[in-house]
Image (cartoon, rainbow, N blue to C red; front, side, top):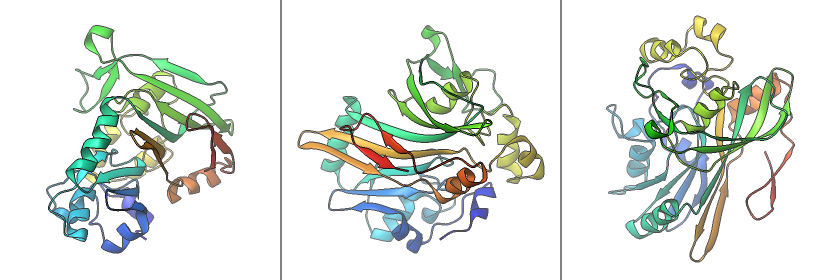
Length: 271
């Protein structure tokens, strides 16, 4: 298993085949579902095929092509869904386009959130930000509609562990809405109040100054569950909380043995 120090480097390390084996949630004729760590880039990068999840899977399985259906930002851990052929990709993509997909995340948020809250605020690019990818809540004509539900599970007086359900799929949606609420995701270099930390990280990796500004080396956000409602019935996958975020929960004395209930067929699942 890769060392936690990989979270501290500005460039993602090369993925090893044995790591991919450890990350498997489901591997069948149609899809490969992986539990991605919070240092892995999904899309191919300049550093060769083994520097990204898509490239590494293609090399690992000797595939000409894989279809990335459900992707994550580099620093978000959890479920990534890759289709192995065009028909499988088409079926999953149709569910996405029909909004027949439910995604649920676990997030560590700054501050204390005691009541559930749904944010219905449009999101668009921040035209004044130094960070080119930075988004913001914007007036309706300048932003795209975005809805996110936050369900607090536990808090320690400083941080809140929340179950988050985005009802739309905008760029950085969970992180933007959390910051707008005044509860940014722990370790968020862009929306945690210190956007210059992101640029510094890109240049130099994790530094002592960042450790004073941010509680954690990466954004404490994990894609916990995804359900695709397909013609032949729902398909649901879950991924246990990433080991580094389990460490964060222990350090902050936040319980992880809480049942998570909600939108998926009334089931419950332990974290």
